[in-house]
Amino acid sequence: MYNPKSKIADEFISHEEILETLKYADENKNNIELIDSILEKARQAKGLTHREASVLLACDDEEKTKEIFELAQKIKQDFYGNRIVLFAPLYLSNYCVNGCVYCPYHAKNKHIPRKKLSQEEIKNEVIALQDMGHKRLAIESGEDPVNNPIEYILESINTIYSIKHKNGAIRRVNVNIAATTVDNYRKLHDAGIGTYILFQETYNKESYEQLHPTGPKHNYNYHTEAMDRAMEGGIDDVGLGVLFGLESYKYEFAGLLMHAEHLESVFGVGPHTISVPRIKHADDIDPDAFDNGIDDDIFAKIVACIRIAVPYTGMIISTRESAKCRERVLKLGISQISGGSKTSVGGYFNPMPEKDDSAQFDVSDRRPLDEVLKWLMELGYLPSFCTACYGSGRTGDRFMKICKSQQIHNFCQPNAIMTLKEYLEDYASPETKEVGEKLIKSEVETLLNVRSQVEENLKKIANGERNFKF
Ligand code: SAM
Image 1 (spheres, rainbow, N blue to C red):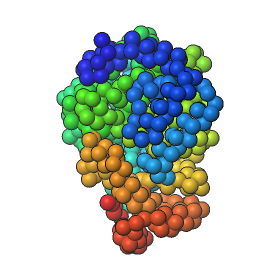
Image 2: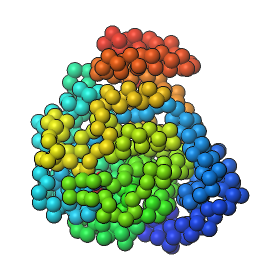
Image 3: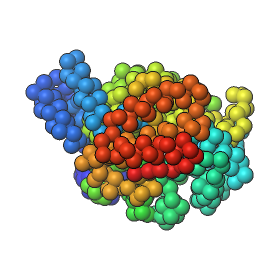
Image 4: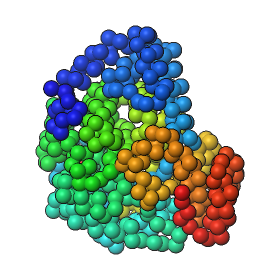
């Protein structure tokens, strides 16, 4: 029944295969010989199967667990260097017809203020985001064919790309909206979106149906097959994720990797990103009502094992997590983080008192973007606002080829340096600027053949020119 090449959800995410994987992982969690051979394979940085990775996740041998974390750090360093890409979510509308029991936007919630941004309000949000320094957004919306039809989403994307305020510009709009049709995905592709992101929430069909009792999202197969339709609609880059806390994390982990294997075997390219959200308190949602919450140690191990299993897939962590937790997982595998986020509709231009808030969930890391940047740099990371791959057509399998041959550094490192310089010139506080200039100086020294060109461009950026890229 299990068939990664099948286009049917129950066959590429086979429940039986997941149960057998979990059994195999449990039986082998102390099988040092097997674990060593999996780690040896992982050291080649060519990735692991869901079964192999599940054994590592289950392993409770202290020494081997240490090795797993060390290997994740090494792969992170080899593939991504010290770069961390920054983005912000932009909530367009919280009208929603679904009944997701963990989300305060569920249709039965009658007291949360419902809001949908007008194009004028989107303009205000985007200017506020540009004034923070953001270049990359993820748009978010509830599912409501009357209030938020695809035409509204497309018009909003168009508005976002059209706003050029001072030196600001949004150069990549990623989209996180409900599963839709091939035709609609084609429209999103034609509107120039970056990654299409859709969280599976849970790969366990039975739990999925209980957690989504009403509305179009109830249909597990339609939701799970969405990435196939997105790719058929021409979208090159798709982003997977599960909402940790809903189901057993080992089940989700195996399902997530099977989904990645499915995309790779059908389309020749795996997911562009994987997100690892954990369920949070929200308006009428109590995370303790869900039985499968995971602690920070398990969370860190999940991040490390994903990093080892799919080295070339970017990993995203949001402001759902605290600064402390983010610091820990950054070195284990995270390559993109949000900063200065608001999860309410209209929250950037018009921050609201919490009681009137339309926020989707509580954020833990509430620091402004400038502070997040300074913190990253003090930890030794190079914050990047780069969107060059997307602008230069390095998406989908073209991106993965460069990534798998580890040539991505040749583009990413200089682009990260130059976009950071833009940020420092246009938006940074004096303290952040000071830390950033020092970092740029030392980073430039590590560049090989493009060093003089980068130095030249940095001077031009200081003189007001923008948007240099490799
Ligand atoms: N409505 C679209 C959909 O159904 O996929 C867009 C997604 S929603 C705006 C973004 C994500 O937030 C959801 O996919 C879900 O995983 C997450 N989310 C919902 N409620 C949450 C909560 N209480 N805590 C943390 N994340 C939550």
